[in-house]
Length: 583
Image 1 (cartoon, one colour):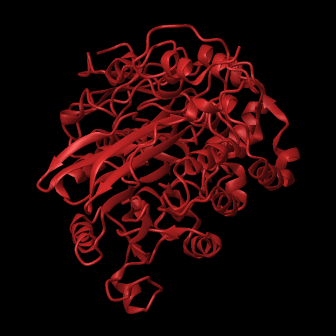
Image 2 (cartoon, rainbow, N blue to C red; image 1 turned 180 degrees about the horizontal axis):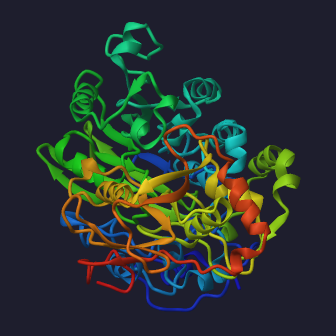
């Protein structure tokens, strides 16, 4: 069945009446679905947090994304039906599948995978052609180079080639820094666009030792911004890298650099762009995370739009934030290549007078893959396909990661660590990257690497007292639920295998975690020492890579003999629309 553009927009998207759509078939003439009404005189395209997913993926959005304090009940902390109601999306639509967790597995069978750089290339080229030459700009918000086995082996080099072919003109970074300074700089030598980061500076010692920097007078390591003339107007793009790189990751990767939000430096730079450089529009390309960006927008003036990333929040409409200088729009464009944001600016008399914004799901079944990009992806993957494509297990349940407290992927990793390393408890970091696997579909090593491929994957076993375990949980919980966004670092709660506990997200610092029990129901003793397995430690470890440990477990067939479960009980959040089924 051919689906006309207006039918699709009416029945598969925002503010539409209910209608059940058939599976969208590859080859259907649906190119016009992505037609956008021509508006303004400058188009900016934005992707973020693709995590090196070259091919289309399944990715289930969270069923738990709790907002605390002022953020309770506000985007991005809406999930499920609360999200659909807020944004006017029909529950049985293709957009409901793209933006929420509702009936995910059923909808996956109807609408297929999203993303894929060959499909993204087709869409980007179309949207750029629609507005004409020199009237558009393509930006990447970071986490482009990491997230797959291929990216890990090639240290992001594959994604540099892909970014160049896609036409990315500027990017900022986060996981890119975990390859270390030399690899980062080598990759940037080959990148045809600009790497922007106004908030990365040399340490005092590095400056004294004359370490490389973009501006040695200020100590800025990278170019902070660029100005591009689009449609005859000067559009400034400022880069804001992830502010907490040396805290969230091993400091050995970036020993010469300091990070941070750098509000004061950002305000000075915006003022200079508006004044001396006479920018007509100022855009912040941010990897702060959405809650941080919302606070930043209330405090820094002169920014028209923040194109945000890091927290993987797919938010269909910008949020307007008032500040002393006017209003800043804050966006976040999801993850894994599922979405392409389109920001159309009307610039008149030296300022932005109006904005149109669309966050377009990249439905792979509605977009023909670009032949050149498909050939490049095939060539990059070819040396590894044989080694990584053999089936190692077939899951009997949906495997996904994203969610504040739990996900079957990390429950599986914890079970594997406990089993293979013979420990009572296992901890797995609350990463938000990692794609979804449907039940009954074979898992390969490539799938496993898409959940675990980092530059510090070593497993470990150590003894920890019950008090130390509680302290770890409390510390990470405060990072997730601190009422001040500037004390949040993104990510989700550490996953704990062999352990259950109660969490009160609205509680005071140090008192959110209670009722800790081992899997046998015995209360955790504060003074007793327990064997704990884990991976992705910021301290150097010597254990086997986590993918080898989990792979061994999966091949043993024990996956289906173990009970998976998070064991987390929530208190104090009844009615919170950041929990599916509530609000």
